[in-house]
Amino acid sequence: MRLIIVGAGKIGATLVDKLSKEKHDIVIVDKDPKIVEQIVNRYDVMGVCGGGADRMILEEAGVSTADFVIACTSRDELNILCCMLAKKLGVSHTIARVRDPEYFMEMEYMKGELDLDMWFNPELRTAQEIAEILSFPSAINVETFADGAAVMIELKVKKENPMIGKSVMEIMRDFNVKALFSMVVRENKVYIPRGDFVIQENDIVHITASEKEITNFSKKMQVFRRRARSVFIVGGGKIAYYLAKELIARKVAVKIIEKDEARCEWLSEELPEATILNGDGTDHEVLDEEGIDKCNAVVTLTGMDEENVIVSLYASRKKVAKVITKVDRPTIGQMVSHLGLDSVVSPRIVIASSIVRFVRELTYEGARINQLYKIHDKVEALEFPVDNDFEHINVPLRDLNIKKNYLVNGIVRDREFIIPTGDTSFMIGDRVLIVTTEKNVSGLEDIVR
Image 1 (tube, one colour):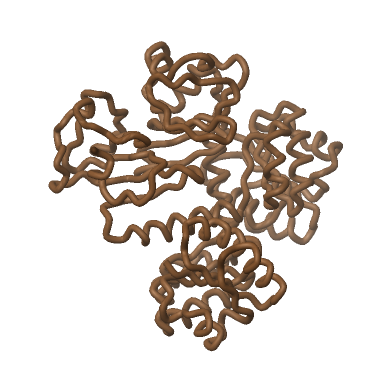
Image 2: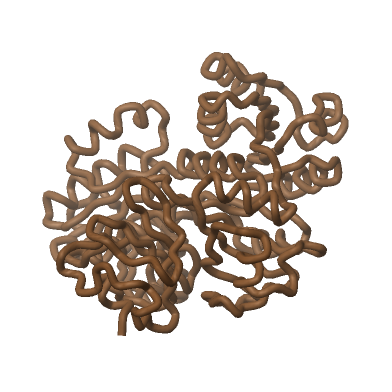
């Protein structure tokens, strides 16, 4: 596909990095010639220097033959105007970055009126991801499938975990686990495990099951932590605001500490149910005085990665059950896991992954795929419907010759999530989850030899 990315800031640059790996034809547009030159020299992309709301600039970028224009400058109005102009000039699809909470309230209505195919708010999406992790504190990360019928959690296998040294089949048998091992990452190598795959210490395992069975699994693996009921947020920016609204709606007690007095006043007005503190969240005496060790979870959301890491390390030292750290710079993000901080979120990566998923779903347009999930750089989860065209209806899985590197990750039937066994067969109306390292899968028949 041909993609035009307008705005070469954090998210724009991350999109170029991720989408260039997908072998798309990319043009980056930005007013700063130095940034455009840097990106063009680093990636196999074209560059145009200028503004995204300039008709001549968009035409120079090839808007009339482009499949997508993704506008991600720092200005909401400019992004919306860029997308409107691009549609008038013939682009197929538009995506706009819109961050202002005032626009957010009307965005679904505006999306149709402005002919936007997708809009995104990095802070809101990041807050939603953090809220999901807080719902399953045992997990490093959480992904939901099939409209919430299934959950995939990511866990690190630490010392003395009962899984160590056991095969996947033995774990499921000995612990009566109704869950699937969807993927294992070991020393940067990815495996889609079969029954004889043996789990080792420090493996990162991805487990799929219903929400209830995920909880049972966590208890049996001795990693269960209760859902956070009180959360201490350090930093009162946009992510903190959206996160607090989400948590308050879930009946979670929220405390926010923020340096800026004016921002505290605004937060107090907008979030009357939360406790808003004006203070320095990087001062350990202030944190101790405000009871950081008495909350279930700490989320560090200041504008400085280094501050977030330091405060998170302090919270871990104070034995806080769950600590989530916002880190935006890739170089720091790569180091954090070695410091013992497990749950790290990056707004640029969260939103770039969402956009890549959206682009890929439209790339598959015409294929029989309900949803596509990118769960790792090398692994995708796909949701396929079972219809009359599938030739292997009511055939037990043990009798299907399923290709290597494909895993039937679950079946949703009448809103019930089913862990497949050899006796399970596909039925018309099922939604089948497939995990694979293979690319260009267009239908359920592609997984069978």
